[in-house]
Image (cartoon, rainbow, N blue to C red; front, side):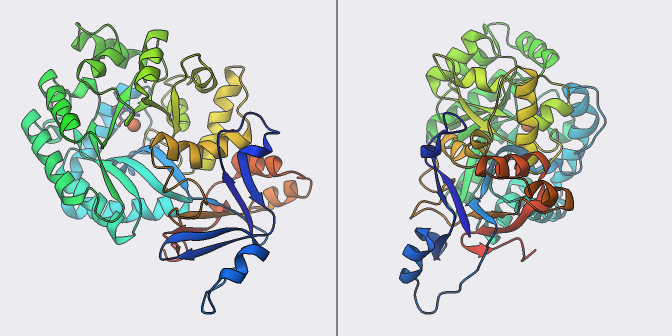
Length: 428
Ligand code: GUN
Ligand code: FE
């Protein structure tokens, strides 16, 4: 089939040096890894006699998509009719997450969760579980069963939520440590330290989070930052000694290059500078930001600052409204349009593959088709629906095809998803 893999961030739409494209390419996969990648003529002689050949012509083969922020216990929160973030959390999200204390429920939703990721071409995701250890156990057990590279953590939250959703600083610390011991580094599981956000953590819990971050400096940290004006105001009232929202996390030592901050829509210049200096990642969740009316994320402006902020992109299910990274980038594009900016299709596909892999410091394993990396792959069909096929008749260039896939595509455009070299979509 045709191969597309990025080498670096594209400068503009004509930056053909930023990616590798093979119009007649092949991948050789062995033991879950890519062992050869390139022109079909060059790769096929290296295939052993018993190799199984799968012909994906005329479709487009890319590294599997990476979703940098979503909530595993919110599959049944998606499409909840709320006016804004705080109402949405209190009315729909917190009550729903309470159900994940039941291990049967968590296991059932985990099955659906991974099915949905694979159906949408997502091979790695960074997830929030609920406060309950049972939810993290179900999340990682399913990752292990499917051999997926997944990052996740039990949320720590000890105030401003229903009783059934609260831990304590000690419980949050102990259970996170236990989850790390049970799952981190097992197959392709990664545990992330996950204080939900400053509103739901007391200063004592933030201190416990800081202790975990010190003990486990290699782990990712994920939380929410600067999503909604009412949220920002309430947060700053809870931490009056901090100069701004970002400074709260900084005061507890949580700004670093493994920290993933969901949203970051309304950052001040000072906050963006602090993020940049720390190497922290701002994770853009376009469908969620529009759905909850949170605001327009200045992606291009943050990336081209003198002190640039590292960027990730994500669905934020269930504040987000689609599991598809194609739908996600369509909405990201429209947000930049409203801000008077252009997000070109090469950049979009860079972000959902190599860009997100780099923002996770995992580009040596995922996000590319490089030899030696994990064989996590998506196969795309830009003519998946009658309307897309009709448009494809007049599409001439690769960027045009990518833009069509982004603008009209969704799970119907995913022909196959390979996880560690195994066809996982057709196995559902
Ligand atoms: N802030 C704190 N928790 C959440 C959540 O579950 N979703 C979103 N979008 N923002 C949050
Ligand atoms: Fe979120």
